[in-house]
Length: 236
Image (cartoon, rainbow, N blue to C red; front, top):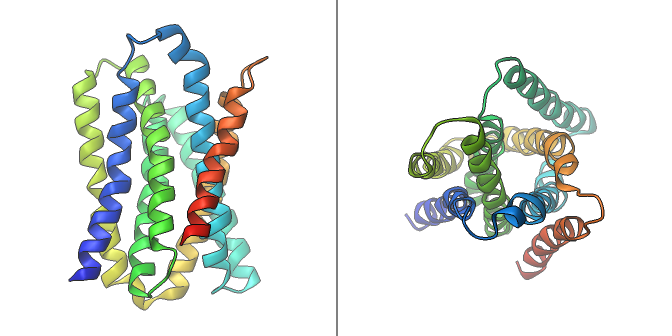
């Protein structure tokens, strides 16, 4: 029971970072010009740094420890390819929810991996949850702004939808705990698949939009995002 409560608490905390990011995006009346430029780009870059730290510090090391080289390459490349196909499909159907779908696409596999890692007694469970929260808040911010600019949804509707999406975390975590824990190679594959997809997302969507000419804050925000992940790893 203790492990179940731990998984529910950690994944819920990570998931609720999405509506928390959306609430930050609601602050349109506070220096709106600055919010739309350097601050928004800094948030995106910070999220990119956090995503990169999740790849480098947890997902790839944990996944590569279990699989052979061919499986590692296949799962990692498969994740990147799957996210690319998803990106192409969203572009073809002109969906306003591209950032939202991308947010769920990495949140659910990570929650699955967290639950399985908890069952296996991994020491990286709390670190993974922290990294998930660090990346979900900027992604929630960006997804909120994207939906507000390209749809007629009201702010409260978007935030409530993000709260509902956060529930995927505990569900996925418990699936990982009760079922995937018996298949460590599958968990490792999911981790590497998610890592490949996240890396594609960083270079396709986040990094190109984060930079601003003659502005240095966003790039340093990416360093801070990775640094927080590194500090979390050293403290666990």
